[in-house]
Length: 102
Image (tube, rainbow, N blue to C red; front, side):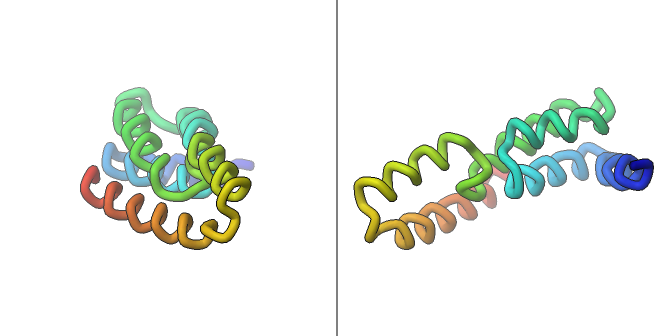
C-alpha cells in the first residue's frame, strides 16, 4: 500500500505533473473517479491543475466521460454498422481537441 501512495505522490509533485497525470488517468477511468482518486494524493496548491487535467482528459476516450459512453450506446443501438467509424472520428477529434486545449 505504501508503494502505491509513494508512486502516486511522486506523480503529483508539480502543477504540470498534476495536470498531465489527471489528463492521462482520465483516459483509463472516467474523469470523476480520476479526480476523486488523485485528489487524495494531490497537494491543495495544485487543485486547479488537477481539475483542469481531468476536465481536458474527459475528451480523450469513450471511457473518459459517462456522456461519451451514453452517446456511443445510442450509436450502437441506432447505427450499429457505424460504430467503428464513430470511434475513429471521435478519437481523432478528441486528440485534436486535447492538443489545442493543452
